[in-house]
Amino acid sequence: MRQSTCLWALLVASVATVTPRARADEAADTAAARALGGDGITLADSGDCQQAIEKLRRAEELHHAPTTAGRLGECEIGVGRLVVGTERLQRLLREPLAPNAPAPFVDAMARARRVLEHALPRIASLRISVRVPAGTRVQVTVDGERLPEALLDNDRPADPGRHTVVASAAGYYAKTEEVTLGDGETSSVSLELAPDRSARPVPAPDAERDHRRIGTAAAEAPTSKGGGAAPIVALGVGAVGLAAGIAGGVMVALDSADLSKACGPSRICPADKQSEINAAKTWATVSTVGFAVAGAGLGTGLMLLLLGNHHESAGAAEARVRPVVGPLYFGCEGAL
Image (tube, rainbow, N blue to C red; front, side, top):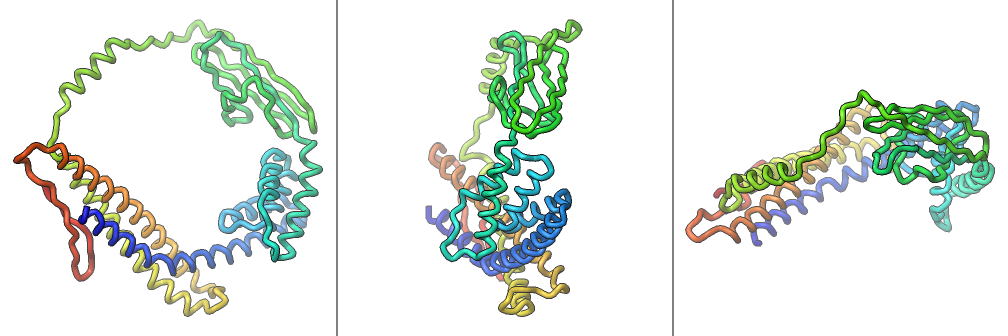
């Protein structure tokens, strides 16, 4: 347990080096989202919602704001994607605004409410049924997207316009049907699949044979004492991840210091610093992934060692793991 505590203490201490860079990343993402959102709103105001959607979507991925989310949902409705757009606006309206929220945020919420009131009655409804023998597994797609089985024989919200419904099942011919829905229209589609006589039947599984195979494999599986090489492999992976996480964190800290000087208190960085911002983001990703791998590897390795030692018979080799600290690294090593 002392060894485990040591490893986790090293991991937690290393994470602290990423914090300054994380703040710099957030500021850069917010600035980029503001620029993309502004471009998207300008395109939406000019009536070009097709181009605006991509700008607004990317802005939302970087930094959520009522101004961009509201106009994105409005544009999605404008190009006929009523279901997606109204769902986005309803999620936005469920978000509470702070008492001191900026006026543009308040206006965006009011605008989203007005757009939603006009769009909701336009959503159509489509019920899809497939007639096949009981127990047959059916796959249905609507406009190329798979329909969950739970929605079969149930009303499903749909965008007005033309839709292609395809139903298929093993041993049956696929059936396709086109349906066009008007604003607020409720419609249904029923497809009956015809058996494909040329299809080869799927053999039923031989339960007894599978049972015998499983039993034989279990009887022949070799047993290992103390977990074998698995704990050492897991600890090795964890140590590599830890080293990558620390190296990434150090690079992030160095880049953060340089960018803080260049960008100033306003956190608005010069254009010639974009390559440094991108490099810092890459190192931040390396650091995050490294620490995640370290946590999984070290935790798994320690668990395997503890379980292996618990079940190991007397006289077997003892598993050992200890921290190793050097001038340019720290990590762990172990042996069986």
